[in-house]
Image (cartoon, rainbow, N blue to C red):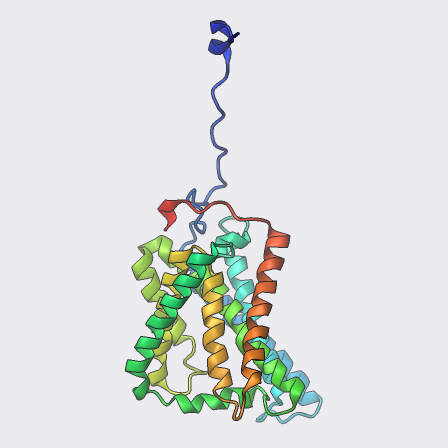
Length: 296
């Protein structure tokens, strides 16, 4: 048996150092070191984009003959989409000032099926338990106004559009912004628990205009905290999007009298659309780097 001469071993080069990460990127696979002040800027830009879009859409609707005091449901759906897009764009813009944004920076990364399903169930049960205790204080029945405002009773096409907005677009957009960006920035600043609490409070407060009752806001805030902790446990916002979608599906279906098989279609359409979003993200953004234990 032959072996390499000692001098060849001596001349062999040591393994190369790990490549340096761009400035501002966490080596653990977490979000970059976004500053908490960026959260305020993102909110301001998102609100500005929403107001600008609302002004343009409302003006166009009025010029086409709509009543300014009672805009058609289609306009309300468009306004909601503009709001979601504005806040996503704002988060991407502010995040780009630290480092070029990647999908995984915002928690858009795959995770193992076991923890995915297990932690979603745990989070849902925690929220359900809190809802059962707090629910009697809230006028949940007044939530039925939202689908009507979106035109859910205006025909099949309007119903599908409203359902898609509530159970797909809203969960994806809100989780991207709140868990992916806001919690990412606040977590880097003050740690998991303070970051989760602040994000939950902001998540509840931002729904002040759309919540049926001010007493509903603490329930939303608690849900926001639960979603943050779900993100921590799984390392991904996909479980957060799924839980958010499930909650919205339950709420939406609860406003539809006489629904039976339609409920199954609603859930299948919502979760199937979210799975398609995840596949497209992986297809175009590529796999995320491994999330090291220090990031959990």
